[in-house]
Length: 364
Image 1: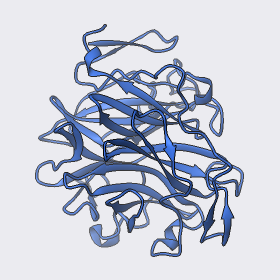
Image 2: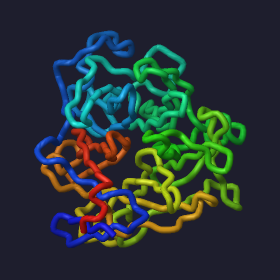
Image 3: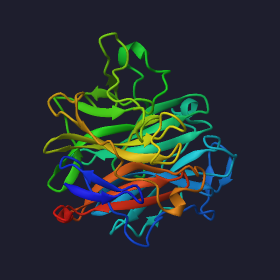
C-alpha cells in the first residue's frame, strides 16, 4: 500500500489496486494560465476574439509524436458567471509534460457547421481524449447551447482538424436520450507497448459517463453510443453520491479509464455536499478526485472504491478563480517516459499537473 498525505487531513492509504500516488511537481503549477494576447477570428461572433482571455481549465491529454498534447477548455470574456461565456478548446504540446507550447488559435470551437444548433453560443467544453491503436483520436466533449448540455463525439488524426459527429446518444433507442442532460465520458483504455490505447471490453467499446451519477455505454464504432439500462429500462446508475463522503453531491467521470491487473480503474471527480450530508474533512462544495475499480468481466460491477480522495485542492490557485470552494477537476491522463501524468482544472481557472512514478511504489 502507498501512504499519501492529505494536506492536514491525516494519511490516506492508497490500496494496491489504485493508480498512484500522484504528486504535484514542485514550483511548476499552474502550467497553463489565461492569455489575453491570443486572438482568433470567431465565425460565431464575426470578429476577432480573445478566446482564452478569462479562464483555462478542464484539460484532456494524449500522446502524439512523442509529445504530451493537452487539449484544454478556454473561455473568452463575453459574459460573467460560470457557464455564461463561450468555451473553445485549445492545444498545448510538451516534451516533458510540464513546459507547454501553445497554439495561438483554438482547435475546436462553435462554427458555422453541422454542430451549430448544439454549440452556439456556449461552445465546446470539458474534453476527454483517447486514441486507437492505429492513431485515431476520439474526443468526447460537451456541446453547450446555453439550454442543454449534450455529450458529443469528434475524431481527428492530427489533433488540429476535427470531424464533429454530434451527440453521442442521438441514435440509441430511436433517439430516446437525444434531449437528455449528458456529459463527462471516460472511454476504457489499456496500456499496450507503453501507450494508452482504446480497448474493447467483452467485444465492444465501453465508456463510463455522467455527472450526477456514473453510468455506462457501449459502441461498435466509437461514434454511436448506446447507454446501458437497468431492469426498469432507465439509465443504469453504477455509482451515485454517497452521504458523508467527499462525493456526496456529485460523481463525475474523469479521464479515460484504464484496465489494470485487478480490473478497470476509473478516476472520477466528486463534489462535497455543503452542510449536513457532506464530509467535514473537506470544504463545502469542493471537488476532489476519487477512484473506482470495476470488474473486467462484468464492467458494471464495482469491486472497490476509495472512501477518501487521492487528490484534493491545496494550492492557492486551486481554491480561487471562478470556483473558490476549491477544485481539482481531473480529465487528462497519459503514460509518458514510464510515468503517469494527470492533468486537471484548478477552480475553473487554471490547468495543473500531478505525476505518478511507478518506481516509487515501494516507498511508504
